Amino acid sequence: MDLVLDPPRGVAPLRLGMTLDEAVAAAPPEWGEADVVRRADDDALAEWALDRIAVHALAEEDGTTVTAIELWWPGEGRSSTTRVLFDGDEVFTTPARDLFARAAERGLRVDTSQPEYPVIPGLSLGFTRQTSQKVARDADGLPCCVTSVLVGGEDYYDYR
Image 1 (cartoon, one colour):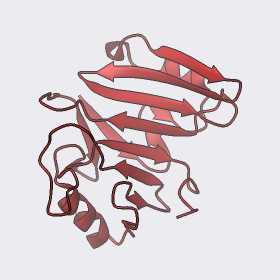
Image 2: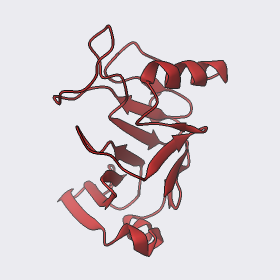
Image 3: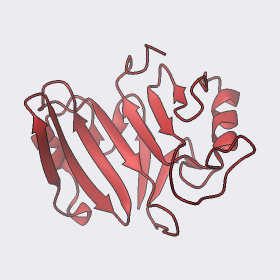
């Protein structure tokens, strides 16, 4: 299965702006049943595990409207047949250096001012390059590949 990042709209079939209930209903049957977690009146998420890829639909502001979709790498020593794609690159297996260089070649600005949390503002893609697990690391000590990616709304990373 392929999960294609469509920033700043979402990750099909999940779309930003849906209600959490609509996101749960939109998920195909092969995703399995969503685990819905309501952490506070203004914070909730629906989560699925797709062949070890964690998918979170986040309702961060009012607990009902999806404001971001975050996907997490399976973890050390684990693999997945599910691919997470951004412009044809597999997010969790393409070296971060290459992933970001190709984005820059396409005219996107990649902000690496916080090396563990690079972002592509405007598209509102945020990445995590942090893990306590024993994985291959680059010369800067960062994991060679990203460990999560978040698709937010157009202004999600404007503060950067």
